[in-house]
Length: 120
Length: 107
Image (cartoon, rainbow over all chains, first blue to last red; front, side, top):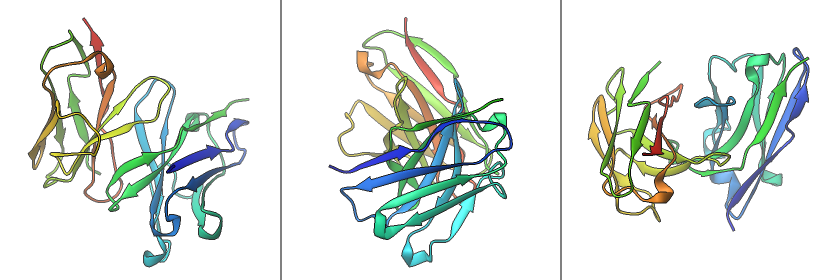
């Protein structure tokens, strides 16, 4: 079965750090462009960042809200995607989804999401 | 950044109704637009990509149209499982953005 499973969410204080993971199975992970997308409670979807596949040298793109604070990385040998989040703010509270970007454009495979709560 | 404006933001409809949701872009997208369905507590599900291509496994009552700056998602006959929130997303460069969503509720 093709699936993505996120982990690593939890409660963190403002200014703190957290690392999310996304484990992929049932697909050739190294061939995929992978993204993080988040959804604040009761709000819409917000794209966070992308890491391209090995053919594109694992280059990254970020939303303005993530640039300089968040880092998307991957370990193709472990079929895993990561989101390192530093200097967290209360407005980063959200469910974070990892997703496969099919053809680099649309998200055809999503994880179940992991909740990050930034609060003192 | 490309802004996507969905309308309406809320829609009340009955089973069997024909429903149309519009997504307007702040600049031309060619056909680089996708539609997603999201139910409470679940991840979004891809319905339509490239403006009008139905994702595998999605019922044919869903259809998409449009190009440039105006796009529509149509549900030809609303079914009980279709009550959800729908989002458009542009695929035309970074940053990727989503529309604000349209919540379809039971009348």
